[in-house]
Length: 183
Image (cartoon, rainbow, N blue to C red):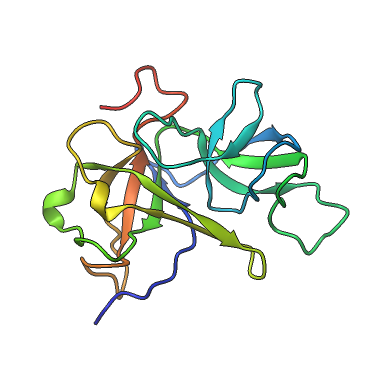
């Protein structure tokens, strides 16, 4: 059975040292940010201390994953921060939190041999109607050298198999708070 194509960004699964408590910290987003931020989006720390959605690419250090928007009292139904809107988001920013994220399709699917390899993200635009992130991992970027995410294992859940759109457990490899970026 083929995996369901349901990109939804990244969400925490466990901590590398054990435990399932996922702390977040709050970060500001300035109005100059031209891309909406959705729960599940990978984010980066900008030089001015604000955060922005991450783009793909080697050397783009990730801060973590957006857990949600803080204090959107102007629209309590909104679960994402619109583009060009200042605000505050919660971020899973522990460098040793593991996340589940879907592999994209259209290339060479990842196999068990890819475990331990590194991959880039695909920073797809989220859905404003469902407030769902579209960040995925890029199956065509697998490398032994430094890249944004490290493939830990195929997520052990029902109806998940190696192939297009598989759910993987990953660790942020190029992380803003790691002593040395990447491996």
